[in-house]
Image 1 (tube, rainbow, N blue to C red):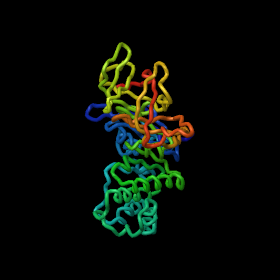
Image 2: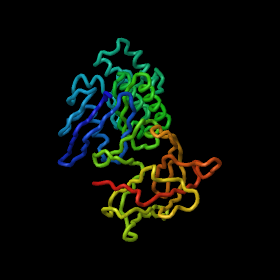
Image 3: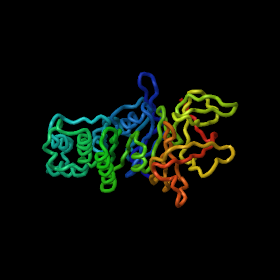
Image 4: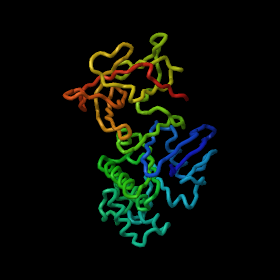
Length: 338
């Protein structure tokens, strides 16, 4: 398969600290890849490396099988990025959207192209004559996205596109991105903390921690400290007084991850060797990667995602807002290295 973007042996550092260490990453054309991880994990830096807007310390970026350099003029016409901080020119909406088209000379009818781009993000064509300072936060983000979509990029990278927008704007952003993928075959790479939204739109999710791509999923992460219980187990007390048990960690402050597949919706007491937690189910959605349901549960101050959950017919315990029990094995924990 010909991948649209590839990374090989990427190392990047800021002030002597390694922020990216990625031996290999392949992105399929026309796919939607989600990037998950905490603040400072390297998601934004990874996006700038993939968009060829920052030079890494070492390693190679490939675009359609060809090694490319940062700020390559050809790449700038084929890859575009929407940063987390919305930036608009201090001009009209039309000027903001048509700016890139004028540089690339990609459209003779700029007014029509700008109007179509606005419609993609759910804004009326009359918005074209508004000034930048007349827009709400959600409207400004949608205009910034419209300016990128007007270019019909082969690859669009987005950093927290729905982090500070209202629900309506988030819905229109999602719709516009899916349309770009479907109509133009645009490859999308999206970094977001909003796990539910990211799971809903992505074909696959890459979890990043301390600049490294994890083999496990990052959804169910528990941050120390851990208190020893006995020679085999340690625990963490949640906000509601429940305790999460794990195998003894490498260090008391180690970060633990439970794969969504390792958690199960409990029916009755846990089996021997397993533990349980009680929480409130907050949502359910279809996992596009596994073609199975994923359940969101809050236990105390900790959020969990359960994949492939068994929800028997007639069970009221698997409805959003209802109490639900999770079963797990303490040895199923994965420890993240610093």
